[in-house]
View 1 (cartoon, one colour):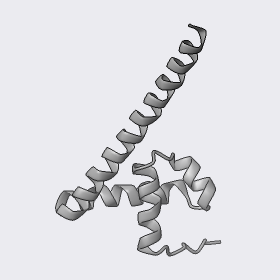
View 2 (cartoon, rainbow, N blue to C red; view 1 turned 180 degrees about the vertical axis):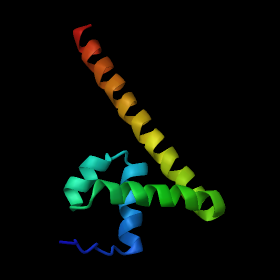
View 3 (spheres, rainbow, N blue to C red; view 1 turned 30 degrees about the horizontal axis):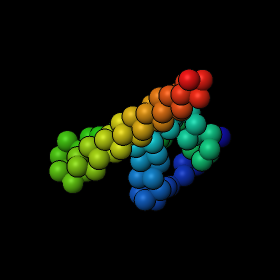
Length: 92
């Protein structure tokens, strides 16, 4: 029996791609949370990256997503360091 493929709106696809690229969410996690095939999400990400090659606006958006992810990781690391220093200062 052939399964019918679902049609997802472009805004929904962009949201999923953004969650993956900007927030660092895994494909498996997104697939489980939204009930979407992992392969579909992977294809959407691939299509977005290909679009970035020819569309300057999409490239700027992709660069912004990458920078946001990097900054979020950096912030989390700095928070850990800050918490560690607070605990160390309590012992002194």
